[in-house]
Image (tube, rainbow, N blue to C red; front, side, top):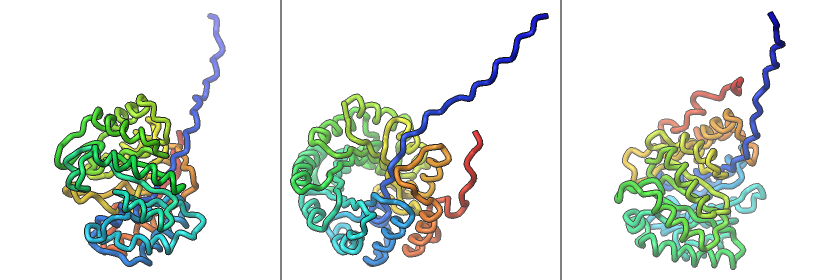
Length: 319
């Protein structure tokens, strides 16, 4: 009988994953919908703790009407307390030209404008329909360029609306086309009420690429129905290079009944790192978890929604 040498087993090669940038949103989206209004110094301390953990691009505040959003009434003071930290890339959320002008005057590194994909939420949240918000974004984008400030736009309620129901992918892409015409530095999609699933993520991101969107894509997920982390991973696999997250998983949307908040930065870091996906900046997930526990205490919460601070980390998987 003729024997043949056994061919050596080949080791499968895995292409290195592209780094993902984390935008820390706890100082704004994390605090904005919490009942307890924190003093300016605590907000500044939150930002410093995030910087100490390695996070660099941070949504520090929202420039909105104080009577409508009392948690953000000290926007200028918060920025003044941290803007000289050379580590910080500060983002201010803006809803209109007045907010943009305030953000520029306060010294924000960049601004993110909001355009809501559904008219129902657009009218209730900002008093203007989606078409009017797109027009306002065009004006803000031009003004930001003139001021030398980076300007991004986020499409809110891209996966579903609390008033209009499911939002078709075609509608999101129509809104995105209008936003892209103004030349944003970055385009973001947000699952504002936490109803999305990975199939939607893949469809929307694929559609954005088909539009010829050659700007960085960013995604903002809430974990209201426990799909936020699956959506984040699907977004990265589809080509999204920037993800929003909130230390401790604090925050949430007031329009989403039972909302459990943003995806937690520390839990997202665990997911990415254990999956072999690096971040653009080296971030210490354990320090972020400590920050998540601390800010939950400041807010009077029984515990942070995040899991890593409770369960701890684990060794990298053997594949």
